[in-house]
Amino acid sequence: MNLRRLKFFVTVAEELHFGRAAERLCMTQPPLSQAILALEEELSVTLFKRTKRNVALTPVGEHLLSHVSKLLEEVEALPALARQLARGEIGSLKLGFVTTADYNLLPELISHYGATYPEVKVSLKEMTSDLQIEALMQGDINAGLIIPLHQTLHSSLDYLPLLHEPLMAAVPEDWVRSGRVDVSGGRLRIQDVADEPLVLFPRRSAPAFHDVITTYFVANGLQPTIGQEAIQMQTIISLVSAGMGIALVPGSLRRLGRVGVRYVGLEGKPPVIETGLVWRRDDPSPTVLRLVEIARNASDQDREPGDGGSDLAGALPGLGEVSAPAAVAMKQATSGFNGQGLPGGG
Image (cartoon, rainbow, N blue to C red):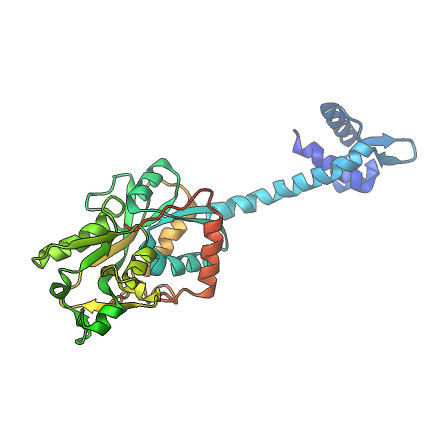
């Protein structure tokens, strides 16, 4: 389809006079008339009723005019659209995340990204770290917030550490009141609860997070007693609230207020989990590059992480509380993903 002929058609339709249309187009009338005839032959329709005194659109021409006008507007907008796409200002971004990131990195990272690039459609999918790696390799997601596994990531992936967060104990409030767990010093000795049932992620679902906790016990000369396993952090906290055992959780989980749970720091050197951003090295998507840029700028700022705090607390405004805009952004992003979110912790 010749776009010049379509432009000629719209101009003649607006003027309903070949002479005036030719003047607007800075051309003579004969080639304009020939172009309209050629367009009619190409479409196998008559667009104009011509007499010696006037020119009028046929019913087909009248209906076609709005479609052609819209098409030409879209064509004219293409250069600006291409530049926006190249800058990552519009487009889409599919981001996976581990469940623990829901309480620290994710809300404000998405809020910051959404405020900077509001025209990008962000879709979120909760997945374990291993499933995110698989989804990245298959091109199902663009990037992910993971707890890195012990083994080296595939050479086709890039990784940026964002958060180093100490774990703390979540214990049943009733145990504290009854004296079963002593937190009078404000911190908990892991040796004092070594025989208590432990609630944690199953290793098959969250190997990195599981191993950080079990290794911590072993390093202190202890063997953990596995009481219950759950694949959602909310479920783990609920089980603690019900008195089913204790759990070691990221400090940011204190934001998950739950009746019957007391969050207590660990004495000595608590275990630390790392959360970072992973993406395909060869991903040409500018939206991914913009996300990495925002995350890298945040991680480059020097901060002192506090007990249970985040390395990015000072870099992403408001990190530590899920702001209203962040909550809205996450709700919209999650609803925009085609597929079912999978539970995951590491």
